Image (tube, rainbow, N blue to C red; front, side, top):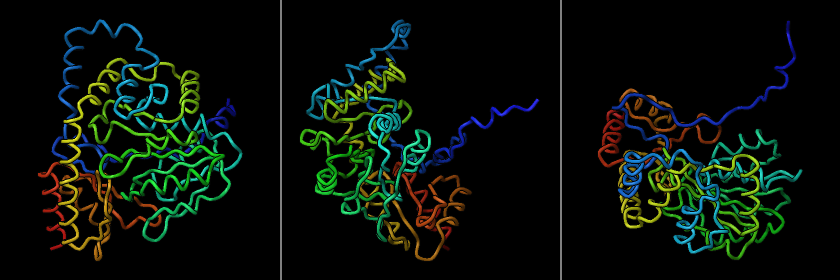
Length: 354
């Protein structure tokens, strides 16, 4: 007997993450992960639970107090200005639910993080993409229009381009009736955070992640900083969906990472140094490479197609990211790995060009 239940199944095109491999010899430069391990203080947390796991039989603190306090101290805000979740993806998804409830479309760049349209489809939020210019730059004046909310990554992905704080101020001041979200997943690699601006603008929310600069992509820790009203609304949505967003180990791991500022800066600086060196080497090979404020490079070659280079590197067990979408289908996004990994990639490219 045929039923009509299939008509009620959601039809959505999901987000596609960077290609994964079970080959331990694969050089993985396609997911913007940090090539260095987390803080040694993180290891101590795991060792503690390995010796005594009794604490896991109870629910974690639903208010995530220890992690919120650590983040609040690090960014010079109050605990009530901090929200935490399972990676910034979770934080942003909950923010879409919490703040984008108008019948007006939300706005974001046409070339940006490809999860945004997925959330809009899932939550049924109307949206409008605003084209970046021919140099992939975002212009604040393009957002001087009626809308139901705005989200902009700064630095942007996959273009790696960062805008100054004046840009953020411009957008927020021209949109007093909308919540503006600045997605700062990559800000630690060369951008200037807008966190301080949240103290002045009550409609501004800043999101960040531990997945990139803090080497904790496998733990799924993200956070948002904003006015008490925005954070309280986020908490209401979270508690209507999943009160225990963060597990006990993640809370302690995140706290340990935030408290180890010296290690954090050391790793970030190593990534930046490698990024700048590799950028120059790619330019010498004939690539046009955008100036990056992230832990990846966005590049196109003057003579060879991005797809050809991408496919060749795969045969050499090197993953980089290729986007088969309009406007950027001849560009490559290359995550910054360890120096020896990047050297192997450069060597493979030289072989390809011979």
